[in-house]
Length: 448
Image 1 (cartoon, rainbow, N blue to C red):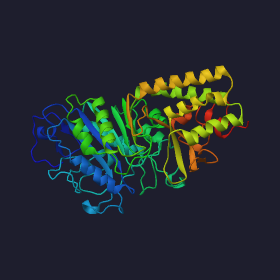
Image 2 (image 1 turned 120 degrees about the horizontal axis):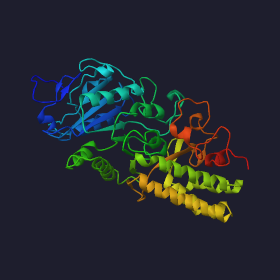
Image 3 (image 1 turned 60 degrees about the horizontal axis):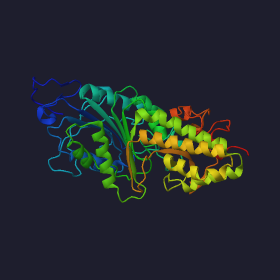
Image 4 (image 1 turned 90 degrees about the horizontal axis):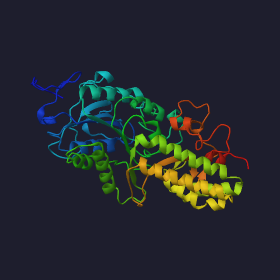
C-alpha cells in the first residue's frame, strides 16, 4: 500500500506495513473479517491462480469491513502475464475499476515476519509451515479483525504424512506443493502452523479437502471447516461470486461465509457428476471420529471368514461412492456415510450372528447421527448429504488396490510426522501388527 497522507484520527496503524487503511477502503466501522489466502501456485496451477486473484479484484470492496490478503507464490514457466515474476509476494486485494481481467492491480505489502518487501523479489517455500504460520501472525497484527478466515489454495491430497514429494508416485499432490523447493506441506505440519492462531474458518480450495484426516488434524483450530471430499476443477472457486454474496449479508457471520462458499460452488459446478462441498463443525469432529471408529471396529470383529471379508471389500472398492484421480496410482477416498450404509445393507451376508448384525446397524445409526451434527450443511450433485471422506488405500487401477498402505498411513510404522488421525485411530488405520478389531487390517492384511 502506498500512502501520502496519514490520517491521524484513524485508530488502526499498520506497523510493519506502509500506511494505514482509510475509511474509504474499510468503511466507518471496525474490520469484521480478515481473509488470508495462501495461494501456493509454484506449480502448473499458476494460470488458475492468476485467474482467481483477478476474481477477487472483481469484488466491490470499497467501504466494506473486510480485508483480503493473498500470499502468492508463482512459477516461472506456466504463465507469462503480469511481468512474469516468479517469486513470492504478499498483496492486499483492491477492487479493479476495470472489473475482472488478466491484470493484477492490487498493491504489494511489506511483511517483516517473512522478509518480504514491496520492491524486492524473494522466493519463499510455501511448503514450509513457518511461512504459513508467520503470514497468519502478520495478518492478525497488521489487519486486526473480529474474525479471521484462512483459505488454503492449490493442490490437495488429504491424508499425507511426512514423506518427501520426490518419492510420491505421480499424479499425487499435497497441500502447498512447491515445485521450486520440490516439497509439500504434510498434514501434521499444516496443523502446527494453524494451531492456536485464533482462526474462525479454515477452507480448502483444493482437491480432497473434506476428509476425516484433515478435519481431525485441525479440529481445535477453527469453528468451521469448508472443503470438498473429491476432485475439484483447476478453476477452483468463483471468488467474485461468493465474496459478493457474502458481503450482502448484514451480520457477516461464520454461517454466512460458509453458506456463501457452498452456494457459489453448487452454482458453479452443478453440472459435474462428482461435485460436492461441505461445511464441517469442527467442535463435533471428535465425536464423529469416535463413532466412525466404533462402526469400523464393529464391522471388523464381525468378519470371521475370507468370504465375509471379500463381500465388504467389494463394497468398499466397487460399490461405495469413491473419489480418486483418474490416473494411477491414486489414493482412494470413500464417502463415510455411503460406506456405512452400503456395508450395513450386506450385514446379513457377512455374519449369521444376529447380535452382530444388530450391532452393525446400531453403530451405523450412531455414525449417521454424528455426521448430521458435524456437517450441518453440504451439497452434492448426486443429491446426497453429510459429505466427508476417508482414505482407504492407494489404487493401481479401478478397483485394484496396492499391495500395501504407505508407511505414513500405518499406525506404529517408522514413518515420521504421521497425522493425528493415523496416530489415534484404533479401528480404521492399519497397524504394523494386524488386529482383529481393525477394519483395514481385516480387509487387507488378516490371515483367515
